[in-house]
Image 1 (cartoon, rainbow over the protein chains, first blue to last red):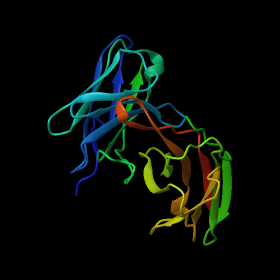
Image 2 (cartoon, chains in turn brown, purple):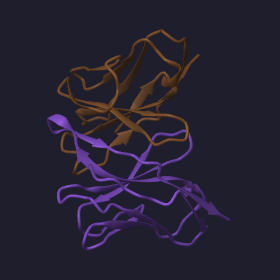
Image 3 (cartoon, helix red, strand yellow):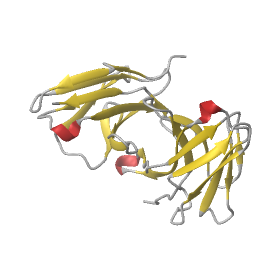
Length: 114
Length: 113
């Protein structure tokens, strides 16, 4: 059973650019969530996808968008990058009724905006 | 959304039990208490969760008070590898029946030799 894999592991972008981060969910998991973790802070919920549709969103602007594919993998896209977008971006997958299970997190993508 | 309160840091001697407290006084009846931990620069790792009964697995035990307003995570025999930030999370429902995890700042546990 494979876990959650994220790519790339590290990324440096320039302010104003766009970035795409990728996530492959754990086998058997059909729900994917994305979190942003700034240095020294706990992860903050960005949004969740189920059946290829956004299923809930945290307090993030529309320039944060995502996709989920039929194989349950997912992408996080961020447009017009700002310096404050520098953070660890975490992907988590779960079965649909995740009350019965914990979420499985990937190791994250470290994004640096300069 | 129910909030959680945890001490910012704790120390524990290797081999002793680590007892990490969490207050969640505004928890509602259908919200679960989850515990995760995060070792430096890695993704959070699920430890255990519960609704109202005490729970135990191979990693830890979770004790939830009868009024559900607080809980304690117990690592029975702490090792150096248990040094991490521990998050107590009350799981909330977000829109369209999805579920988000509201992480706070957690408790930084240092296990010392």
